[in-house]
Length: 338
Image (cartoon, rainbow, N blue to C red; front, side):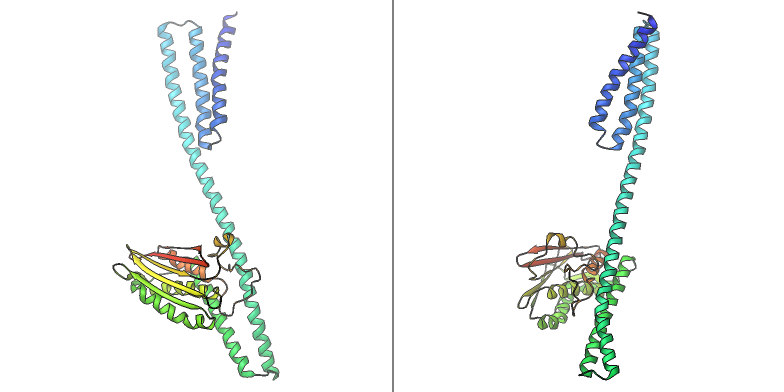
């Protein structure tokens, strides 16, 4: 065989074998991540070239000195090439991570936009009904055909108060979403806050025939470093939400404790439980779970739980919900000190 042909065949065969092994590895490992593909591909190419050169050098019957020079050159070039491949792989890994972050950010933006559209639609619906009723009562009063003007005036005042509460909720939620919620922390008694909230909610519970109980358990110091106004609002939202979803003659249980530096408030209702699909959405702005979207005369626009989550998060805590026997339990955890 022609010497040149023999050398060429040796180089091709040796490089092909290495390349085939590399392709198998690429097939098996390349699916894991772009980084694996990025370093394995150049390493395979470098090793194939080095093996081809070494095999060809042996085939050419070089002297020991010349063969040693070839091996040293191949080893040095191979190490440098592999190092460059690894550096490129790290860069690819950063690009891949950046791409994942962008995808996650895009998903969050799309979810926020979906929530915003739903909120606008739901609030528009909840505003339309009371405004239409107030307009009808106003026209009846202007035309002098209202059978009981005093009752109409009282009803209009009630609707105005409800709309005012809805606007207040929207303003509070906008402050939370804009990061403009500024907490004024002070040392307050968790038991006193819970007691005041339960006392204020008693008339609403009585009007609906719902029993409400409160229990405070303090291990150590009862003081919590928090914004009293915002904390009171968060607990009140949980309690009023529980009352509205508890049937007549049901019971709402409120419990508070300060244990190991963590303040814990739980509100348990008798709503009968929440579906798994709704459990993941109860803290979304505007979500109320009822497809009919019938406005609750004592409720808002479904913003209360979203406000709770925002206030608790601002305090460095967490809020969650789970189904229990006969109902569900909301749990709020915040650090007792900061």
